[in-house]
Amino acid sequence: MPTTRFSMGRVLALLALLSSSTSQAEMVVYTSAAEFDAAVESAGVDGYDGIPASGPTPSPMFRTAGPWSYVGRTSASTFYGAGSAADTWLSTNNAGDSMIFDVFPSSVSAVGANVFSTNLSGSLVAGDVLVSFSDGDSSDAHTVSGASTSAFVGIVSDNPPITMIVTATQVSAGARWPTIDNLRLARRIPADRIFRNDFD
Image 1 (tube, rainbow, N blue to C red):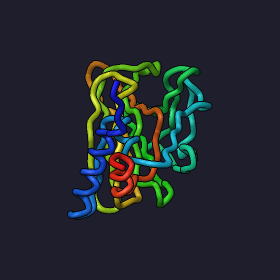
Image 2 (image 1 turned 45 degrees about the horizontal axis):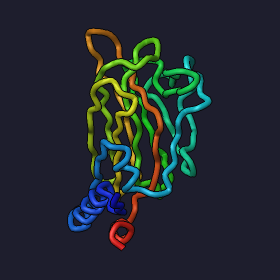
Image 3 (image 1 turned 120 degrees about the vertical axis):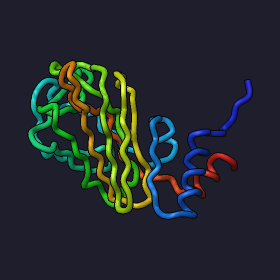
Image 4 (image 1 turned 60 degrees about the horizontal axis):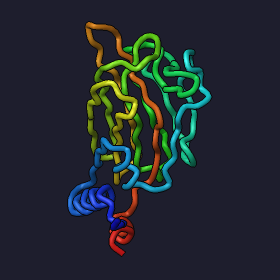
């Protein structure tokens, strides 16, 4: 069976970086964790192990994702655990609250997470979650729909610092809580190194 070192994720990242180098600073949005990972280096992941699976966690919270520190806070109340003790997710105590993640080190230029909705009992439920990003130059908003803990959204920016805000869209069928897992922080790979790694 033929093998190849060709990576479509890295090629897409290269094209985005080359495009941004000839225009003003911008952020590139990824909805695939694999493509996001292909565009970054020194990635760290916070899987929220250790927080209560069905209890409050104070806001703000000061945590790390691998080598990177960050601050998470809610817009009004506290965080609240969701999922199970075997796989804990991070949510809010009030459904209408937003989760805000920022105060990353200046070298962090990529942020992403698995994003979805949960119900009052902390179980996965279909719904829409709005994820807003801003950096030193621009902003972007992306809606994640459905019911999947693997749904992902992230950005790679060439102008940090970055802020990520996660908010659930409320529906008449019942309250929805914004929920994330596996927060990723990383640095973007320079365009020349993406090219070299794939075509050497």
